[in-house]
Image 1: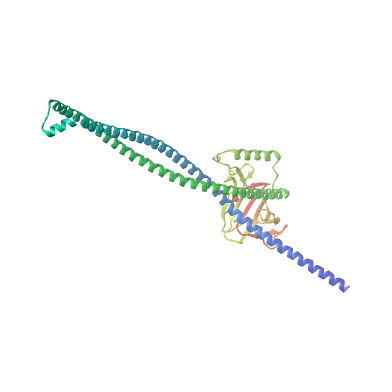
Image 2: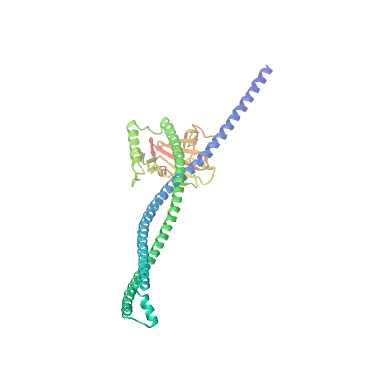
Length: 398
């Protein structure tokens, strides 16, 4: 009998140790998931901002590149025209130079051939009638030829002046084209970087979508729990279909709607007195009501508010006296969740709790201000009345 009791005791101790080990392992896994979720929560909004900034910057660069391309094209047209004019004037200058050379050669040949004898006789002081006539003819021809040569020189001078002007213009155009080319190269480099950034951010957008879907799944899970506890009424099929159609319509619109309703028909009003905040010293970071998703641009109805914790491990308190009707880990992005039932058919929901306070369990009676748990980053606080959601800020003061 003693041996049997010893075996039972040993087995109990081993089983207890195994359970304790599993509890510790689960706690470790939950802590790891909580850190991961908190990190993703912060990264989500950062990714959304980066995607929008990168797209705007890419659009600006595309406009600048288009303007630069137009400027370069215009300058290239001017540059080609000046090149053609320069070629034309260079040809004209070359032709004039050839004409001058021909006239000078013709003059020299004429002198050598027809006037050599007259010049020789003139040198010997023995002029003849023919030599005198040839000498006079020579003078007339030399004068005419000299005038033609001077005219050619003036034409050459004008053309050379035009050529210098063209060279200067061409040089300026070259500089302008070079400057635009450098700018275009710089902007192309920036645009390529932006393209890479947008490509990388597209990958981050997939992370965003995955994160968004996880939050959506957690939200649906909580909705099912609330409906099961008869805290809210499930929307009928017609209402659900209408919301899906509305969301698809808004998602297909290119522009953000000018205004959105912050208190739709399904939210109930409340005119009673206000209670203290469930998270003292907290800051409101997400409001109740409709908002536009920063990436997908469709309307989302937020049925809760999110309060930023002043520090890690901040205490969460029940805002009113009541009874705990739900207290467990939701298993999703909402972390540990506590739901408290109050008078006048009011329920308060506390989500994203990092831990529950000792003694918090279903059936536990609470007074206003009782600590129900702690949060490390933020608290999601939700309120229902008469089975409908209401703006929590109508119930509490911050």
